[in-house]
Image (tube, rainbow, N blue to C red; front, side):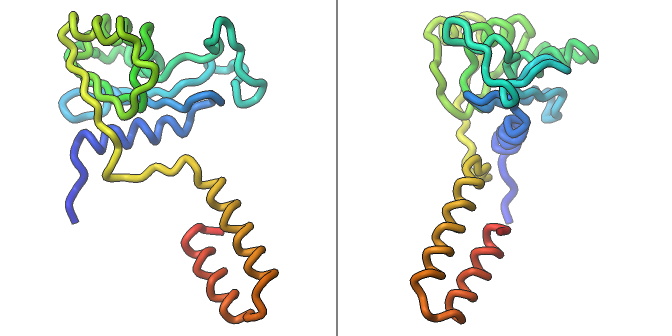
Length: 187
């Protein structure tokens, strides 16, 4: 078995962090790495101890949720809180950073940005990264699947099984298909 690349490994970590997001609009994760070691991680969500968007909805002003701290900022703040230097580090983010996060990444001394998905890539952010000499590389997560739609797929399989049960007279065949579906989808 071939191991996944470092870029795929760290991007998978960012996707895993995104699963902790409390944002109902977009789940984002960020991993800061130095010398092939993870030094911090973050996801987008509310301030510690605050109300979360998943509980009461987003607090949107001018098209932006003001309740949410972005994943990149949370990762950088984690480094600041615990005294971990970010100069020369790399950051892996599930989505291209917004303009504000772009500026924070530059100020933190990050040298390389890896991102999995384009997301409203602001032209000025692209320009700032270039001017700062920060290399930006798109690294789509290909070697490992992170399934954000597993609940919908499970519900769909359950509906299919119910429909099949209603239409089939072959209980043995239905039982075998149901057992296989339960095994594959942990139903």
